[in-house]
Length: 496
Ligand SMILES: Nc1ncnc2c1ncn2[C@@H]1O[C@H](COP(=O)(O)OP(=O)(O)OP(=O)(O)O)[C@@H](O)[C@H]1O
Ligand SMILES: [Mg+2]
Image 1 (tube, rainbow, N blue to C red):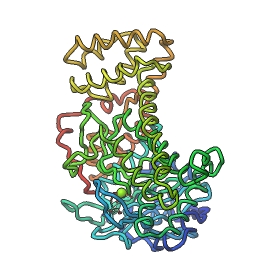
Image 2: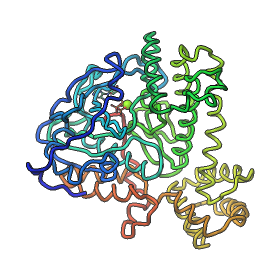
Image 3: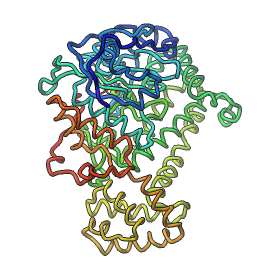
Image 4: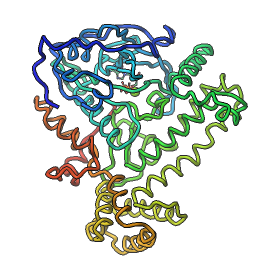
């Protein structure tokens, strides 16, 4: 998307705000205005999110939009707020947290909440400055839209605005604001907050709000009957299954979140909070993407178990409403089958297999071992395999493995299962399940370096590729290539 100079004659953005989360009352949040940033400018925007929100053509030409989405003025009809939540961070109860730098502008009539990340201090900022830097904002913006392009549930990002205003991290950096969009930004930590403070009335109000708005089926007899008629257990069960599905998608695409604290877990099963995330380059099951995660709690291969641990925290928080511990535990039980089943379903699609065969499980297990032992690039392997099935030519895949004999043995077993499939349909399924483009760290880094120098074209190019990651995009092969040597020296921490 290109930006024109804001025109004073651009129409005023009259947006249809409605009371959603804000209707819960002041126990749940603090109303406050964002803190202005000097001389804002556009950095990037998502046309598809603008369409989702029903924004008028040319919205990004409006000075009002630029100022309001930087937090320098407030849209008419919006009542900005910061919500309170708590949470477990790195497995330890952290007490009260809350939106320390995210400010919810409100909810639009279509049911989309709009939130500014990096819009200034709030009562929940603790020692933080309420800001986000350009670097981390670009990563959040790009990855939100990349995940959507991959078909993985996520918060979305409408735009980034930048400012020459300075923020101190390891060094001085410039500030930016990401406008995030989601049906709800409620986290597990919101429930933990009211449970920890023995505020059962507020806990119930929040749970009722989430059920009525996002999980109305949890009140149906079919959903509540396994749980003695309890809708809160039905909610826990639904959240657990959605989370299991999300983990299956993360694992299948090779996504490491990096900070799976309970305050970063969406009650809607969305990917939330893009901090030190990483898409795997080489397949290393124990890969730790967050430089600050010294014990590897959030390593790639631990994510499904951590999600279950987090769900257990949610179950504990909901216990006053569910009333019975065995029921709460039972509501989580299906995670243990839904996750592996969903993961296998994802892997079968990646292999172009449409039928669930017992032998496909062993095939996937052997393959993952082979990928790890041979230090194979995860995304490139799957894309090459998809083309190999399409063209019947496996040499480019074989080239990725040092241990060719073991790979050949695997290929033989795979070919037997593939022989049961329609080859063209299998190849098509694979090319639509195995992305050519993922947001590798070094690609994000290149866009960030250019943007720091005032050139946002690299960001726009990368965004365009990631929005349609299964398309070939001829001429952009470099973006689908192996990472350069310097990629391994990129260090991503919680600093953002
Ligand atoms: N620069 C900052 N200023 C104020 N609060 C911050 C800052 N950075 C993080 N926090 C707060 O610290 C807590 C944990 O931060 P975490 O990194 O998980 O979230 P985040 O990246 O700020 O935001 P979100 O989860 O909304 O994407 C949250 O309460 C968050 O608001
Ligand atoms: Mg967070």
